[in-house]
Length: 96
Image 1: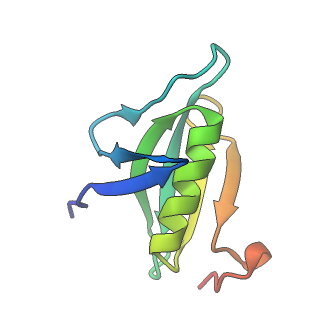
Image 2 (image 1 turned 90 degrees about the horizontal axis):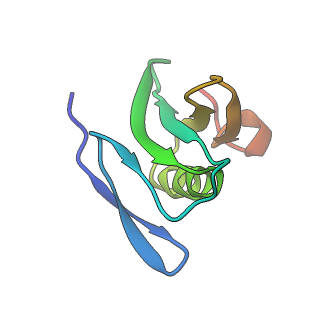
């Protein structure tokens, strides 16, 4: 199943979320890459996009979370640490 690209507003500009590589913006040397995932109603996990930088990952996660009722999360690709979730039980989502 192929997902179509989406335009995501980050601050005052738009970035194009694409599926073939990371989205990036000017970031410091300590920033890392993050994958954004969506947990579907059948409990399958779908990869949405890869971004570079913690702040951008949080902004993109929030934007994707507004487009779906499903739980979404951002994970560091190196450590696999989940840095944020949206639309889950803890933040008022349904968490099917």
